[in-house]
Length: 113
Length: 116
Image (cartoon, rainbow over all chains, first blue to last red; front, top):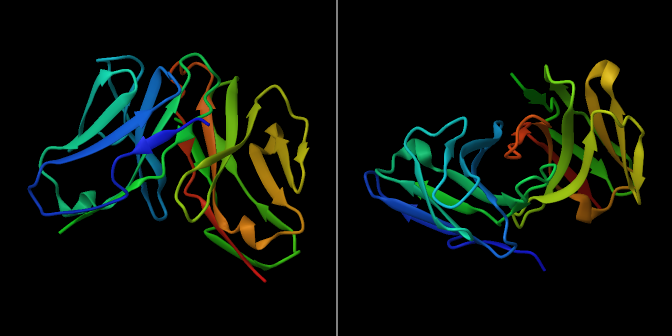
């Protein structure tokens, strides 16, 4: 069974802390994505990666960075968390040249106090 | 710019009623893909359907059906004889065929609540 696993379902952090959200997929997918989900706004793309060590900004990259050192792992980093980054974060992956079906993890709900 | 609009924030129905979720999209591309995803309370979005812009045939899968109309830029989703397990947030999404990386533009989602 295909799987996208996010390391933490719930996190509570303080303003200014550095936060790492980890995502691992076992499908040998080329593409990986980080979205954030907020009520009334749907899912918005933060960053994506189409290959190891490659990354591209999505629609809302400010305040975030990413790392992809291995094909199966894609990390989202909040260098200095702020309260407006309280959200649900969703990781997804897909085949490189496929027509775009995404496979999602269960999400990480981050609260920044 | 691409945009997906799901005007219905929440729909509440009683079990066995039909429910239709609206999705209107905007794109300048002639080739594109449309998707519906389901997000149950567990949080993981689940793929339901993909449609390309050249295929306007309606599709039925069990209790689910989709009505794609390019003339109105709509891709509506109907659940027939709803069940409690259908309670979820449903997202419509759009992807341009020229986008090699499979980025999806999502709508805001529609919360469906099915009560017994």
